[in-house]
Image 1 (cartoon, rainbow, N blue to C red):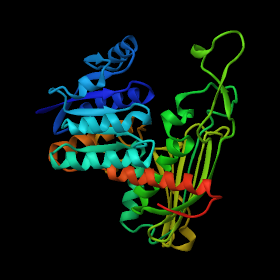
Image 2 (image 1 turned 180 degrees about the vertical axis):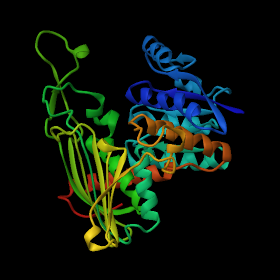
Image 3 (image 1 turned 135 degrees about the vertical axis):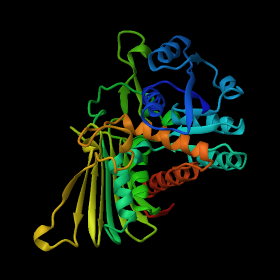
Image 4 (image 1 turned 180 degrees about the horizontal axis):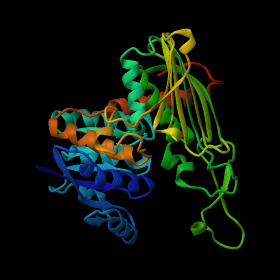
Amino acid sequence: MRTLKVAMIGYGFMGAAHSQGWRTAPRMFDLPAAPEMSVIVGRRADAVAAAAQRWGWAESATDWREVVARDDIDVVDVVTPGGSHAEIAAAALDAGKHVLCEKPLANTVAEAESMAAAAERAQARGALSMVGFTYRRVPAATLARDLVARGKVGHIRQVRAAYRQDWLVDPQAPLAWRLQKEHAGSGALGDIGAHAVDMVQFITGRRVQRATGVVETIVEERPLPASEQAGPATQTGRVTVDDLALFTGRLDSGALAAFEATRYATGRKNALTVEVSGERGALFFDLEDLNTLQFYDRTAPEDQQGFTRISVTEPSHPYLSGWWPPGHLLGYEHGFSHQVKDLVEGIDSGTPPHPSFAEGLHVQRVLDAVQRSAAQDSVWVDV
């Protein structure tokens, strides 16, 4: 069997999640090629070496440029903060490597455009790329897409999507890289709003064409991390991204989609919800109840109508054939194994996997349209 030697650039929270995917997918699915966790890269030699040992990487390194240039590396997985995505991904693609890049694709439209162009050049030479919008690969979310494609909800009239977290409710929570524009690009809008946009477009099969919205920074100063404090007085740093984004999108079908992305939804830990309302029925997905999908069949007899709770655990459901017997639940980490499965199968067959860098670029343009709208008193802006 062909071996795909993988290098992962970055080793934080997403590094752990992606490592789980690379480690588990070849053990649970009959893949056409064998991914090998060859090297993990980070700036601190001691920390990245510890990550390699903990997560199962064969070796560690501190210079991503040297690793990307190695002849023995086939796939580069980019899980660094967004500010470095464009440089690393483009270098890897130009070196002939297949690339998986975490979302959002980049911090700016210009960066995302350069990445999409690099992906197009590389694809002509046989190097493929994919964006890590992992929630697409939660079986219930994929089933929702399939049901829409089969016409089960009919013509879509309205969509509602929200991604709510509460990890910034405490104003004394320290300043982190996700709160700094130079590293993250934007705040809740880019970090979790990007997921909401991608999920709506994935499930409905439609694109956001126009947007209007507002963004807000609720707490503008936060304490620096303990490692950066000097002296007895608490030092603070400025939050330079948004905490909350509320926006509306017009889909290319004409339907309206309402979006919310917030880190101030007290009590909501990781609540991504998508509801699709159509002429024949409706669907509701909730990431905090990720093994179920709610379906409303408006064509059923009146006395039998109501939302039905589908337990998405059957072997016939998306991705479930590789896992456990019906009723045995999956979790957050399983989507990363499904991501590896789809990427490896695409590489082996030469079929470009989804979401592509071009799709990631479109999401970036939607986020940019929201920011431009907010800067102009919420006027409608074309994507």
